[in-house]
Length: 74
Image (tube, helix red, strand yellow):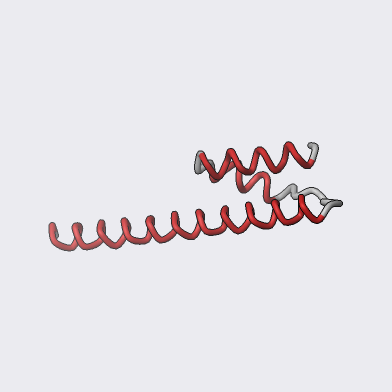
């Protein structure tokens, strides 16, 4: 996969919150020869990481909420 295509696919995956595609792309990070491409990739990877952490926090919050509801109903 060309490096610019990889960058574009990662951007689209982040925008769409496509975690499966982000995971797939993270397993196949190409070698970047230019500093500019490396910086773009680094920024996108940081953004993907932030997105994943936010999703994790959201899921943890929902799980706690469900546990409280279950406890209330029992």
